[in-house]
Structures are given as C-alpha cells and as structure tokens.
Amino acid sequence: MSTSPIPAAKPIIGDEEREAVDRVLRTGMMAQGPEVAAFEQEFSAELVAGRACVAVNSGTSGLHLGLLAAGVGPGDEVIVPSFTFAATANSVALTGATPVFADIEPQYFCLDPASVEAAVSERTVGIMPVHLYGHPADMTALGDIAERQGLKLFEDAAQAHAATWKGAPVGSFGTFAMFSLYPTKNMTSGEGGMVSTGDTDLERRLRLLRNQGMLRQYENELVGLNNRMTDIHAAIGRVQLRKLAGWTKQRQENAAFLDANLEGVVVPPVSEHATHVYHQYTIRVAGDRDRFAAALRDEHGVGCGVYYPIPNHRLPSFGREADLPETERAAAEVLSLPVHPSLSSDDLDRIATAVNTLAKAGA
View 1 (cartoon, rainbow, N blue to C red):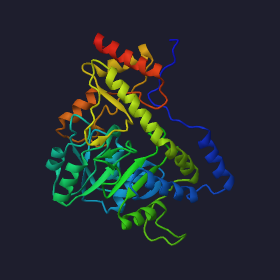
View 2: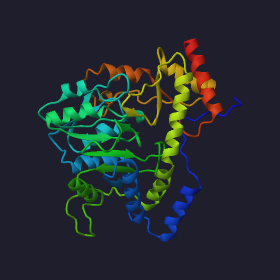
View 3: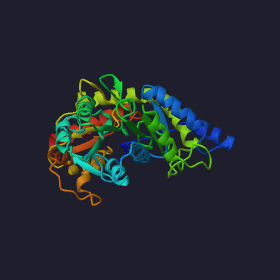
C-alpha cells in the first residue's frame, strides 16, 4: 500500500541521547559509575517521591534482586497475576519461591483484590501487583490485604513510569518497586531497570546483590550477581527522564482522541483514583480478535499487538491449573493499538478509521 505502516511502538532516540553516549565513551569509564549514581538520584526525585533507587541491567533483574533482598526464597509463596509478561512470575520462581496466580478485575486488567485474598495461604509472604499497560493496580485494597495478613507488597511498575494512585506515584507503595527501561517502554536506557525502596536495609542488600555481593572491591559480603547498569545506559536514561513528562502528556492526549473516536470496541476505562500513562492503549474486541488484528495490520497498515495471548499459568514453563475467568477472557479479547508520542494527527485518524471500519464490518 502507498501509505507507510504505523508502528505499534516506536522508541525515540535523538541527538541528545547520542551525545550523552559519546560523553561517556570519551571518559573511558563505562561500567557502573557517576552516570549511574546521577541517574538513580534523578529518577528518585522525579518519579518515586524521593525513595532510594538502585539501577540494574534489566527490569527482570530488578524484580529478582528485589525479591532476594526482601528475603523471599524456597518454601515461600508470592501472589501474582497470570495476565502479564512472564518476567513477573519468573522472578518469583528464580528465588526458589512459588508464584501463586490470582485473577484480574475486568476494568483495568490489574490484580483483583478479592482473588488475591482468596489465594493467601500460610506460606504466602507477599503480593506482587502489576500496573499493567500503565494503569495502577488498586493499591488501597491490596495494601489493606497486605497489612491485615502480614504480607509484603512488591510493585511491578515495568510499564507505569509516572502513573499515580490517589495522587501518590507508583513505586512509592511497596517494600520495593521495579521499573523497566527496555526500548519500548515509556522511557528507555537502551536496556535496564530501576528498583525503588523506602527500606534502607533492603537498599543496601540490592546494591550488594547487583555487584557480586560487594560495595567495596574484593570485600564480598554475600553471594551476589553481576546485574550492574553501565554508565552508557544510564546516560541515555538521564536524557530520556527529562523528556518523559512531555511524552506522557502526548500519550494521554493520543489516548483521549482514541477514546472519543473509536466505535464498536471497548476502550480502556480509567479509575477516578488513577493517572494512566498509556504504555499500551488496550481495547477489547468482541468476536475473532486475531482476525481483527490481522486485518488492521494487513489491510490498513496499523500496527498492533496482543499483550498477552497466553496467561502465565498456562505457559509450558509453569503449566498450572487455575480458575481465572477474567484472565482467560482478557487473553482472548485484548488488542493494543498505537498510542506512542510519535503519532501524527493523520496517524490517529487512520487508526480510528481502520478500527471503526473493521468493527462495523464485524471483522
């Protein structure tokens, strides 16, 4: 077709990011150094209400190290959603603990507090909500459950940079929180993750665990990993952090346009208590979702994605039996449309026209 396809996601890397990388390369100090320290401080001040931040080499590493630092291990259970990327449950399993899958509520695709409470056992030590697609989980209800049951709360905020719940930023609620800095996230460092915590002891364990168990060279205090962030990645992240607010505003404006102009599909609602940052703009499609998605891509040149078609409990890596009806329904119906800041007004018109045409035709 003559019109260029609209990508489902588009990382934005400009001259400032390139210059930041060159600056680091000129110094010759490329491993964890001053850029990483500065990025941690700036991320803390900008996004998580001053909580301490520890930079790592991926979001998955952040979850894994956070759980290890919190003392999670063999014999423990952590309640997680099945409707999310596999890294959430993987990180629990990698500690030797068992991920226990709970259902989501139907509006916002986040953990259902009632399902979580029903999943608590004598082995449960924590709850790990995912702020999926950029919409916060119900941190009020989940926090109440955690307090009542004597559990820890761990936030998977991989997709939710700058989202808020009742005015408080995600990443400021749990024992720790993890933000992913993968290229397709709302901001990137090229690859990487950031862990926030208000617990000084946990922060220290995180810093030990990411660096072979040492804060000072050759003084290994515990068995650790090599999960450091490089200064190259931190330099990119520092530039992206300065642009995040503008990009978030553009995502929200793009989402508002789609809310107002899409027909025949269920657009994503937003809780009155939440600030949604639209890592994904996820609709529900009645009928054959996969046929609808193929027609969007092939007939209209509109990129889209299904996040996530197979619930985690049914993945070969876990293979669990679980009664999670809302999870199964979402996996069959969801479709994420482009919402990234690079979209033009013509792009948005094309997306709306394509969706409406297919919905009307019953594609």
